[in-house]
Image (tube, rainbow, N blue to C red; front, side):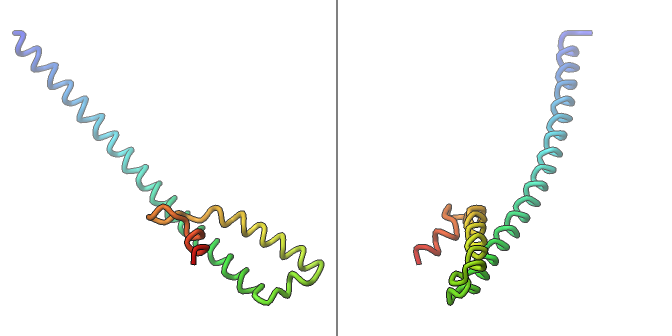
Length: 106
């Protein structure tokens, strides 16, 4: 067996190994992309739910009736604080600004 044949055999073996590892990494990458897409859908639904809750809370207290009552006012204030904490979990738009900040500017 000549040196050329040995180099050729090693080269073929290395190429087969590289093809196998590249294919394996591609499969793993595709699985991770699928998981990421599912997470993005979940986060989008969560953000829409938070926005809906904020709109409902704002609409519910447009006249300030709940804040006037002592017991209900305390509970409603707590609910508003919780909603404020949830608002921090809204998704960020493609522009890099949160939807909440855009509404504050208007």
